[in-house]
Image 1 (cartoon, one colour):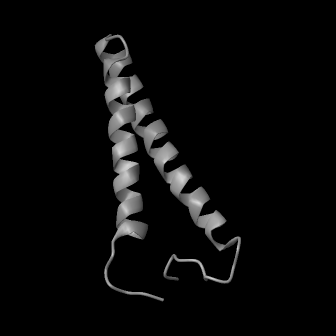
Image 2 (cartoon, rainbow, N blue to C red):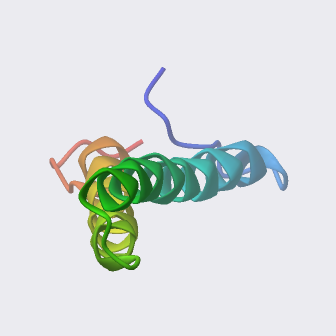
Length: 76
């Protein structure tokens, strides 16, 4: 379960691509939702929601990098 597709499989990376996209979108939705709740609680106008979306996207990208992007020297 290395997370990398076989070179001969033309559709091998499609599943990984969906995982990457959904990880980034889920981070944006979850942390944007938390920011929305903080905005409602503090009665501010979408300040923390925007911050949550940006931080959620950055956290999703970092999570994808940790799982797929590190070049740890292992080649298949």
